[in-house]
Length: 260
Ligand SMILES: O=P(O)(O)OC[C@H]1O[C@H](O[C@H]2O[C@H](CO)[C@@H](O)[C@H](O)[C@H]2O)[C@H](O)[C@@H](O)[C@@H]1O
Image (cartoon, rainbow, N blue to C red; front, side, top):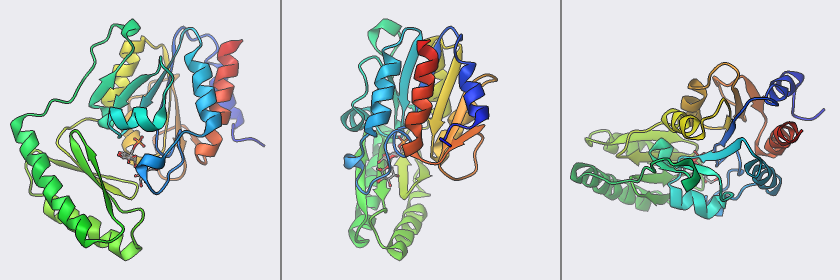
């Protein structure tokens, strides 16, 4: 049996006649399998092909919604031209001109720049002291990656980072999969998904994601929408797939339904 359960198949069937469908996908761990180095992540070819097919359909809008900043998301995701993009956990937003929406760029206040510089200094020192950890620099955040560190080193680095970042004003610490992100902007994927729904004028939304931050997006789904959790963990989503390898089956089924 494939990954599409009869219940999920029924939900997909109901998408046939919705006037405007929005298909919004998280990137890392959903469209692209998790890998050691963030710069090496790429969509699975079958998923990228299905996404391109969906983006070419009339009355079906595609979007990526990620914790990555937009430049990084574009570089690793190579999204189809008409795909809307939400980055930096909801705070950066871009839509093709045809949608007539205002983009949202990052413009830090001096208090935010000061907080980011402090957090950067702290995480650079922690990373230097914890072999195997690396840093990712974003316009409004600094991320400590511990995926490649030994377990005890990773735990110690995350513990030290939490302890030292907690006192900085204008900063929020976000836990993710083998990462700790220190961000000076407060945004959620729920805000991002609400923006996408409005800009696309969507009557129904499909959203798939794997991480804790994706729960904010599942939380704003409405009756008739479809939320799909990718992988294990507690979730508000109604449906689940085991990993990014099963996403192409979902996208292909939606593509078939919307192509009828
Ligand atoms: O919202 P997402 O698109 O899922 O982005 C969340 C974070 O993804 C990236 O980190 C994760 O993927 C890396 C590459 O597979 C992996 O090495 C890391 O351990 C994961 O946490 C990205 O680097 C972060 O900036 C995103 O916030």
